[in-house]
Image 1 (tube, rainbow, N blue to C red):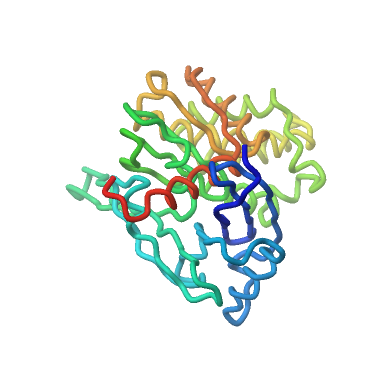
Image 2 (cartoon, rainbow, N blue to C red):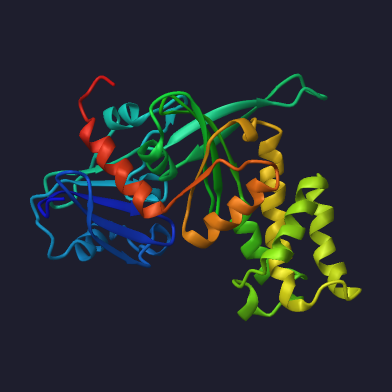
Length: 313
């Protein structure tokens, strides 16, 4: 691996700003991160926040950014690319911005419009969007065939990939609901805040099984409280049980949409979260799971998209 840098990659989310100095052969040379996410930037001071995090890095390197920086509340709103979308589509839609240096670009997100229903109405068109996860996905997607990629987090994304392109996807607000329930609900009153991030795997798996077997999520969530009231579970296990129910419900819903046991599944996340999703996937018979760190995935995606600019892929 050469130490010569060729690109600065930025993953700018709602709460976190991450910067990557990337070598001429696409390898990560240096990573920086802070809490200057899009939601905390005031008075449109995006240029100053960018300059601060890349301070000391070569000023002549191009900068490519993904994530919420291209949202309506970000630096500059960029267009969504409709599914199916791949790295080449994203590269051709790179949006240049003025940032006090010559080459700064934002990668637009991806959108889909899924048809659901069939009950009282013959069809309901449900839009879905993502910004940032698409860069991770095209960075790790294999070339041929069909696969399933999961990017869990505040808003978990499940994408069906075909021949390296995002064919369609769904978003689940799992992480956000978990955070709300453990901080601002009647369930939160039963929990010790110091134990919310500690996972008991056996209890988590119990929650996964309940989430998988009972489709009425709003009912099963209340059982977290009743398990405590009747002494079925100690307080220290409640957050693990809740996490399992939510992730189990998410995996169960996707099991109805795609044949997980027949597909290779890639989970893009940090080690703990990827491990929990692997446990839940194993519970539905999916053993072919690959875990990839989110930093690795986004660096690969940023590098690949930048390399395809102007191409006809």
